[in-house]
Length: 375
Image (tube, rainbow, N blue to C red; front, side):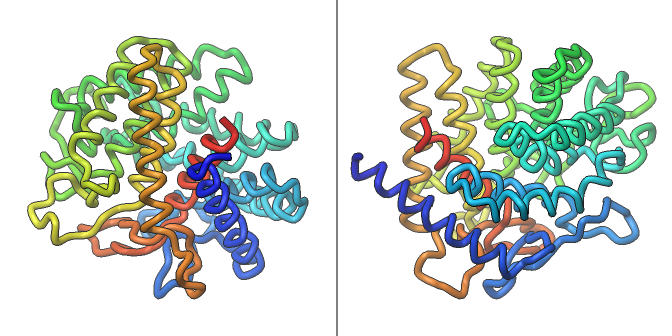
């Protein structure tokens, strides 16, 4: 085992200990972000404009961490807790109020099924995929974000990370409707959200009746024309995933283009500021979650890109990111911190958890470590 491999193994062991500790503390709750080192919770209820909470889409990541812990340890306590929490969010499989069904059901039910082969998990995931399909707008050529599907004309880079639920369902069922819808949405994203320089808009507003573009928008970036780093990470991961399932050259080129933008524009420690174009750089916050997502996506990209030189470049960049996160961003020096990764930025414009642990940052960090260690 090389020195680098030992470091990754130690980091994974540390994450497993955190998960075990949090399992006892959290009980039947879903962590979202940390406040003063302790997890703030999101509930298992659906999105509702009147009772809007920022963490409504994050429940699946804690379950996903439990599944990864079970996969590594074979300790049934992680499996039992994952099942218990899956049953709490299961009712949301029938809701089409949000595009975040992939975030909710992929790391929880799809990952869980791939590890255990339990039919219950597969059945719920398939239902959730149908609910996500119902948000597809033919005029737009994409899946819309929030609210009534017939009235919403918004689509976002984030949705690329909800498509894995559809790709996975296509793989399990062979039904082309899941493949075709995911593919069409990815093409719309490529055409309208990815810029020529490889950066990304947060989202686009369409007229839901005509499909005409009404304008670009951002809710989490510094401004409409800036590049929100977590959105860029969603895009890198999402297009690598899209190429894996379609082998469409345009998706590979887009994934490479987005990855190259990240590589050229990230700071020396490989962890981006919350927005690549924040005018306050370097006097602003980083986002460790964007780095973790990117590292995991780059490992996927390295595995599917045919060019061996490019594959080596993307894998090395992923290792550089993970090395920096492990050395500089772990909570290992503070037992009072409930999360694994420090210095995540959830929502800078709203001043929500701008320098905290984020449950999805922890998930993608552990996922990336798992990919490296397991090959």
